[in-house]
Length: 395
Image (cartoon, rainbow, N blue to C red):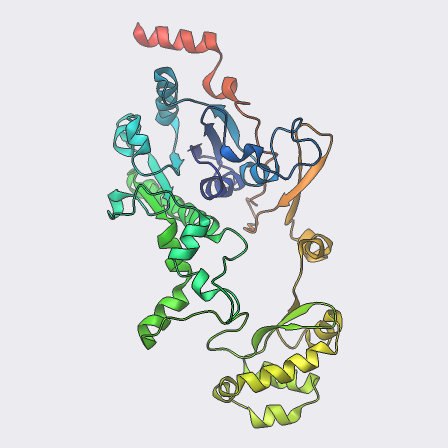
């Protein structure tokens, strides 16, 4: 059933941050009803596709973060569709949206209005710059994407090589981390409602979330008065903690503890380095010299050889690509690759599984992403059933 099988979520979100948040809830068993605007979520048509984009209902982007949801299509510019939405709100636990601030109010569907239909409603928003209800700023109402959030939040300034430009982190962390925090906020609000019967507004901003993620840079600025900047794959206060090029790839070594440093030196047959640089302070002071020594040693070995020499005594790992991940038995044992159907083909595709593991109610992707408006009848009823319900209400 899933730990959240008692919850119904009305999901008004699109693209990445909001759908990822509601995907987490769906994986944990919530009934997530994806309410799509006319034409559907903007990313339905995004590649990649298995074969023919004209035959397949959606691409990998949409499939990955909308699995296990149900879909209906509503146009909030239409009075009947707004009425249908309000009827769903009456029976829902949670509404999640990621429009610009003020969009829902334009349709008279904002938080305050919806709580008139359901006083215990938990209403959650994901925006670039938060909502005025929790702290008003001049940025609210501006559009934001992952790139904007990473730039403003300091992530890009501390990512990349020392002599290179500010660099975006590969995954969309401005979306994904914000979505995860929003999910935590929603679950906290559910717990509060269980204790008090009170719903509430949950607000998570992408800019705010990136500041939270760059916590190390924040305290460094406060303590030193100097803004941190790029250091490649190294760490400002730990050494060795870096990626090293091997004969056929790269491996990372995190041996900043003295016990691990001693093991690295033993593997290198360099007891002199362990003796000459015994403390963290010694190693940080001479990190450039020591990095060069490690780099020379690593370059003479393949990645597998280097990992084999250190694994078990030192934190070490190869730098893997997705092909390596698909071949990793650990990944399969942890159910981190999940097959789902790809509509429009006879194929299955694999998407990332849930990293949240629970013994009694294990989260898991609960089937493929929905077709647009696939579940209209089962969610809203047939046309005749709705007409009968409206007539009964009038009587």
